[in-house]
Image (cartoon, rainbow, N blue to C red; front, top):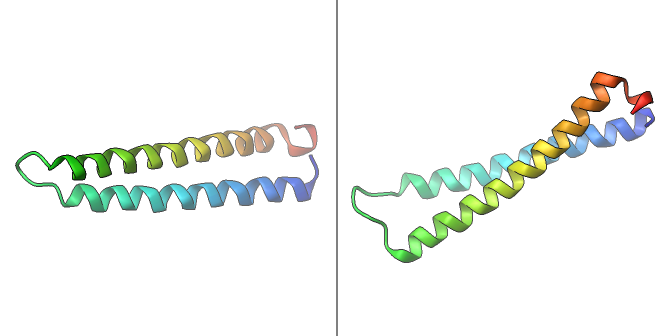
Length: 79
């Protein structure tokens, strides 16, 4: 891996993190609207679908971060 590839890997990690934050904020908004009683089915479904979207972006971020950390730890010339 050269310096340009490492910079691209870093940029993709930042983008993945930003995407995760966007999805986490959407989940927070939905959860803030919860009431003391059970939510109607449609709202529960929206929360569930949003939590799945958040988890998917979180997983992508973790994978990207793991690659970036490995490249940084080992020295990207040896990665």
